[in-house]
Length: 242
Image 1 (cartoon, helix red, strand yellow):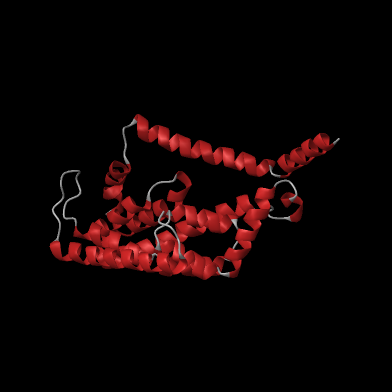
Image 2 (tube, rainbow, N blue to C red):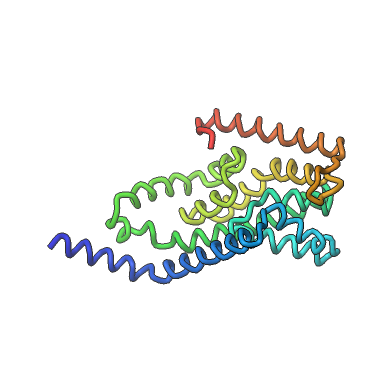
């Protein structure tokens, strides 16, 4: 009898989340399709970025292309670092930082709401009865909701995987405003460092690049500051290195 009840509960959960399971399956197919294309064409993330550089240099349309690509990037798990470096190379240190902050916040928003979609209903009392794991997640989610800004800010400063933080924040259904404010502020040092490195590159053709020493020095300095900030926050919060 107890086994039958468990099976019934399991079926009910599957029925309630059938749409999400279908969406997750489609998402996995999308990621797999991109990975298959990249592997079949021996296309590394760096080579993929090199192929779109000409489009990014096309005035206003280039900016729009950059922002759109950056925004949808989390859906195929494409690394943000390569696009950020390309943004610095094409747009320079000032506009590159501005465009990338805008684009990264849009991409974080998309990842956040994708995570929220899959997390919806996962922490309701009816769901929690299915598994003790959900109870543990609910306690952690509550802790993140109570200190959303600080928690996300720390995650950004200590360089936890960018998209994973956004998906997790959405999945745990923390408030959007503290999340995006913490993301915008916490990502500035890292963004400036990668954009600065991209802006220091004078050639971007796959060979060893010629670097502008002044811009590169600025990038390195910002990166060192980012590392120091991450260490301070790790010690303060007693968070192990990722």
